[in-house]
Length: 88
Image 1 (cartoon, rainbow, N blue to C red):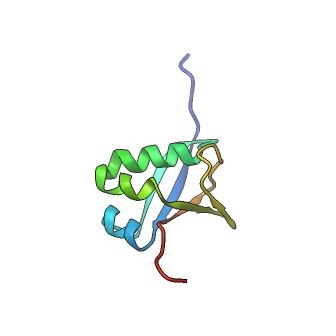
Image 2: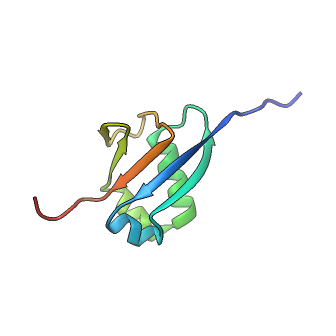
């Protein structure tokens, strides 16, 4: 009997330069239960390619109330992609 991999829908919201690079402000991904920031980044790179890749290299990810750069951090049902912002 084949193993069943459970998945969860993760809503990704893009802001500023991340939205420009992705060409959208929000989209959803089906990822495995227990997915991490690294899994989200891999899915985003797979869909959007090189242009978004440059943003992901410097972005911070908002997961719940936590600003995260750790690729091993587990994600929830929503991830916000925040590129560096100019100004204060």
